[in-house]
Amino acid sequence: MTDVTGAPADVLHTLFHSDQGGHEQVVLCQDRATGLKAVIALHSTALGPALGGTRFYPYANEAEAVADALNLARGMSYKNAMAGLDHGGGKAVIIGDPDQDKTEELLLAYGRFVASLGGRYVTACDVGTYVADMDVVARECRWTTGRSPENGGAGDSSVLTAFGVYQGMRASAQHLWGDPSLRDRTVGIAGVGKVGHHLVEHLMAEGARVVVTDVREDAVRRITERHPSVRAVADTAALIRTEGLDIYAPCALGGALNDDTVPVLTAKVVCGAANNQLAHPGVEKDLADRRILYAPDYVVNAGGVIQVADELHGFDFERCKAKAAKIYDTTLAIFARAKQDGIPPAAAADRIAEQRMADARNRPAGR
Image (cartoon, rainbow, N blue to C red; front, top):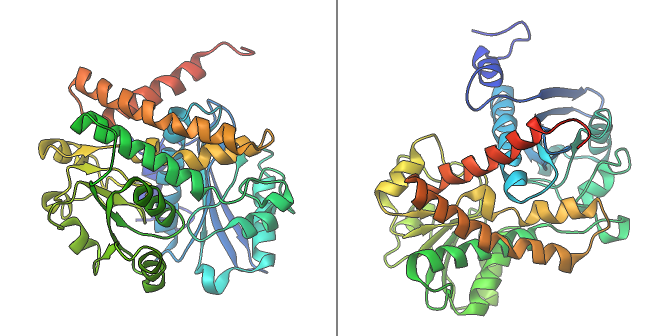
């Protein structure tokens, strides 16, 4: 069944009726001259302009792209709320293979669509887009972050994303083992690309044992050549079954925690950079039932959005790093709230974020 636009009806049901919906606005963008097809989803502007990255990805179909944009935008509302930012949540996806379809003209066309929203949405980098791409988008849209320092931006936000995840790992260790040190802990990282390779550096500097995997052989090789003691395994299936694994860090695409992976996880902690790690509602309870401590993804991976938000006010790296360091305290507070309420940490984080958004919506105008 489809609606009048030909889109699957379940997409519209998600938008207007389901718990995963509640979005304020969804914009479908098309520029035939450049081949641009994009979706911009604004979940909430209660705390301020929606802020979230642009994902460039070869989705199987348009419905999959819309669903991803909706999920990612909603996640950004919670992430920005928990990071203490005065921003709501939004996300954009461009449909296509970035290695083949990305052109300067396409990015400029995309920038014009973002600009047409008049500042309701502030964009940045995500999977498939980079600092150089944001420099191009910014030529048509002043509501663009993640630009290069040469163009008034903060540069690569993955540096602080990795730092925030590292702080989340330290908080998890403190909560579970009574010591934030990761020395001699074994950490498995799935995905050592933009964020994952920075995370490896933090862990190696502290003396952790690191196991990695990635679909790209060159990404793994970059790590093992720099750090010969890092062990590589064939794939994520092998990684999550690694004996003696203390912490599992999903740092690639979402859905890493699902009905197939959770039952075989050997790690005692899950703390990674990937967005939307829980494949469906209920997975957080499955983790809790197995006594696996889950550090909510949108809390620990907020370092990057803290960085790009700061860019709007005149970027200062040390100020951003200090804010990202507070992810340690925020993560500990979530674990404490979860214990107090008798719920999984993911549910505790949701409650805290939802309260902040509700307070903003209920605030009298002008205050």
